[in-house]
Length: 339
Image 1 (cartoon, rainbow, N blue to C red):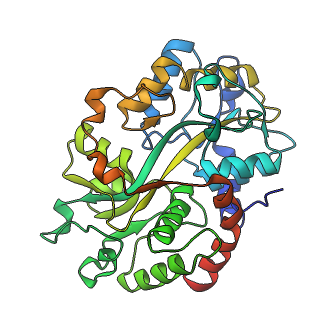
Image 2 (image 1 turned 90 degrees about the horizontal axis):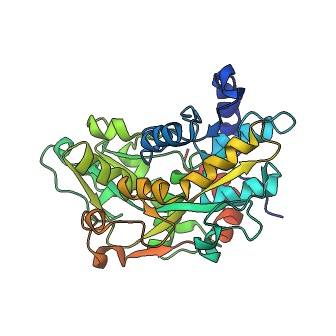
């Protein structure tokens, strides 16, 4: 059985956020989703559509994947959440922790076999490709970095941000991406640890929560983040933003959802899970610059706004199981050698 890897500091943060769930959320016509932040992947539009089309109110929630898993474990005897949204490897860990339940939503057959648990404990709803989300104006005339090596240059001191890899799923994805790009593998994170140690000389900014607004404001000029956030900033918010797939390579990662075990509003939770895989739900993910899991849900108009296929050829698919297995060891090394 896979061991849990998102505990420690994330547990304390999650416990601090448990009490913020509105009491009315347990009422009929509501559902609680952990890790559905309005600024991430345009969850705001998805939650509005769920309310409009299903009559189910789903409050937004700003936990990250690690904090969500920690909260589910802390609440295991008396669950608060109905559904949860997680970075792919954390979905595997949630199943191992016994905090999610099997459910095969509508359009289950449309999800590729390698993007779902065979029994329905987790399933992909969309995916993204990791790279550099860059506020070009905030670079103050410096060139847009094109590689992992570029981020180590003194010119970018104080400009580079990445989410805490011991807590946020995207942070760990960044570690996997740089490790594989520099020649490492899932059995050894020497390359990633060496890169992070070198980056510390540039005084990186390391938040725990999604930092979309901080990039738009210029507070974080360069954030290691997904393509969908950068494209949203450029095309929806009209910000001076570029997205870069690093020259050495990167990874594409699925994001998954699950029904929480013994969810207090399980039937509403199931309706929410059905909706995010429906024609409209998948189209909304495409409109948010995600790669919907259902083939054909991304319109040609949206596809044209992505970087060329030649750039995406540098992105590898991840091995979710090996990522999940390797995470605890990486986190221990990061905390001991980098922090």
